[in-house]
Image (cartoon, rainbow, N blue to C red):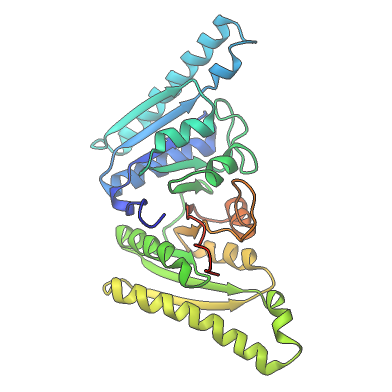
Length: 299
């Protein structure tokens, strides 16, 4: 996706609302993001009435439409009060939530969803609609964790596995620049994954650790070269739980940026194990960057 994803400052922002508190928090977060970028905000309500037309009466469908439009108007007023100069548009969709979000996101938009929801986005909990929206998207998706009301830490966090994560690190660096924040590159490696290579020799364990450090250093050096004004911190940690370390690190970040690379052999639209953990348990919003599979012959 390196050639198709625009930088954060040129992306439109699309947010899904459904009447739930997490969705309202997501809308306010999305408005802040759109204002920061100088981009329009598009608020979407997906009623899924096309799929319900066969078993709902015309009167009930009209009630859904009226409630959806009222929610859109109320949300638009709320974000405009906070950002009077923000360009805001609304959309009532008759389709399901996932396809509506993907269509509204288009090629270059950033999609924002709450951590769970009700109503038009029926059960928008990560594990159902929210997970499908994040896993199947071809554009960046932000899952807004928490209420967004905490004090800012001034740090953007991104997970780095190796040089293939340079695209994600660049995106995170641009997000940090937009926020006038620092960037933390965090590499977490699991010793258990290297058991077959270790064969009980401590020297080999040290060599494995050094190899992981080299991957992180290569990415950090490239980011520092491309973004000389940005404060970049790089850390490598060893743990049996990659997701656990990253979740803990999100307590001290305003945003976590994650790449969407999957292991070879995955079937269908799915999130990796660590990413799945983070969209459920992170303490800050999680921005997921979709990625195409590595070309044949690459690790």
